Length: 307
Length: 255
Image (cartoon, rainbow over all chains, first blue to last red; front, top):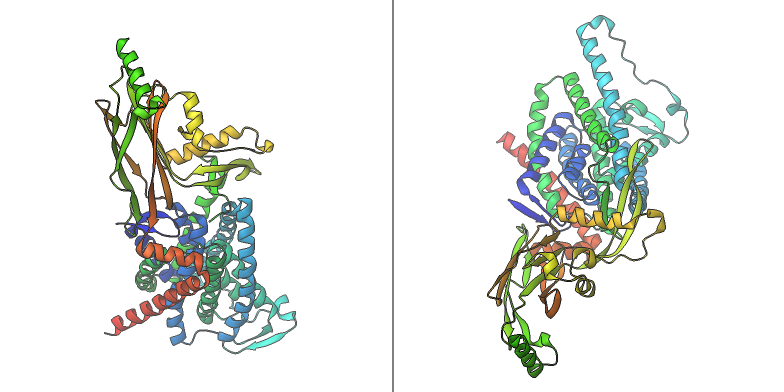
């Protein structure tokens, strides 16, 4: 069944969109990530204009994050105070990100920049995760080598001023690192159309030293607002949020997420992480190939002034 | 010879120019294309007849039909390899390129329209695109216009169909133009040319309106005119959907 998307101005198969939403939903349920890093490239691939894919992706992330946050609120695994601090940085980041996005669009380099962002970040995160989970699996095989777990590792982060107590995370740290992390992720959210969970989660664990159990809930909490703000700014400045597209994706997404969660429960944590790492690296590899190989069509057309 | 003379006399008698002797009477299968949520392209049948006040001439008449979507300025960019990756480098602005353009003829192109008439009436695709003042840095701006035509032809947005107009008894003609699903809104100017020996003897023009209707119209208008409300509505729907889904699944699991 073909459906005409009023903002993207293309006609696509509704079941294809439900399917994409579903697949991304399954993965996000399995791995606890928003899945924006998969969604946006997939939308590019089926011919949705990049600007619409980025803005609509942000809107879809709001839905999937709300769905995820509900579960975490019930389990009380959300650090609202930390979330708010991250959010303050995040909103600033989104505003800057949309400016950067529009500037690059006027230069005609937005596709390149978005793709480069994807290649760099997916490459780094995927690579790190792959190595880390391989080590975890190796450790699990011969438990003799298990290093003693380090908690509260003191580094430069703890030497900064403006300290604040975060009770739910059991932390007493400066607000500067969370604000910076939030800002950075907010910027990525606006430019790449992703929630930034795949960067936020490692940053919270390794940089801020937050306990793993509150990380995902807190990340989801702040992503809702950042992605929502990003949606609003894109709707306001670029008119690129396609509501029917977002709706179809999120219907597929929320159903997929429920099944994904069930699959996730059956797999071991290291296996899950290594699968996610492979997936991230595959997307990265595909995008990198597009940059490196000689394109079939060297020319591209853009309406002047953009949509 | 006698007949040609006669035709000339008749033409002189009936009108100031020979073109008035043969006119187009046009029908369209639809003069409005509604883009609904289920829109998946549209076929338009263009048919008509030649109204004559003179006898049939020896030299056969040909029909050229064009449909042009609204013109807009576009930027055509070319990728170049820089530091090992392919990036957009040179760009050429095309002042006005129709978003859709189809041209159909009743005979091979060369027999249908002369170069001079093409230039005057802007019938062929390269003529329908207006490009002046291409920057010197781009080098060969013709490459860019060619690329524009090539890409849009591949997408079905630009179509050339020689011999696609069915022309019977020098009187009745019909052709069908298929419009792809990625149409933009606006007035699509439809022109019919009657030509003889490559020269235009009569011209007829009408428009086909392409609009979004219903929900498509509502959302599109809202996104442009009330972007803040539209953005807030998008977020509200997303929040509701996320909340609804998690609640529904929890109830399902409990029940």
